[in-house]
Image (cartoon, rainbow, N blue to C red; front, side, top):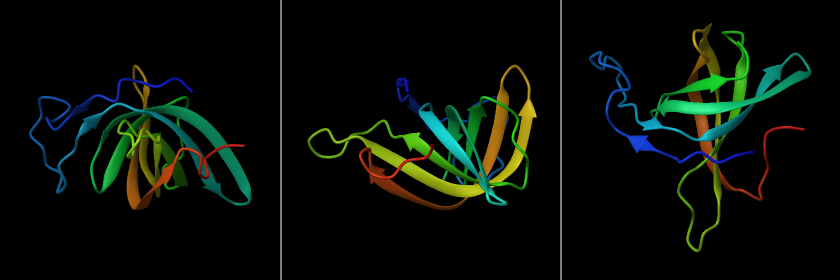
Length: 124
């Protein structure tokens, strides 16, 4: 998995006024996701567009079904202590998924945790 620059910005990601309760941060990191449900798992990859304490906007490799539960593993751009890589693991629900120039997927976060990169991961 390639690493992006991990760019971070606290500015809105477009020219519209921010209406959300939580401030979104434009942060670009590689992700892997796993759709959870009905005994079957669907895996894929993408990139974060922005995130807040309540949600995360992603670009993904395909349109995903709104309402589905998802686990997202984010390659966190900041390292721990002596350079240990971190993964942000987000559990949530897909609230929107639409194909534009890229596929944009909005996820409402229900919980999150950090793991070291050698810890559990999303994917087969």
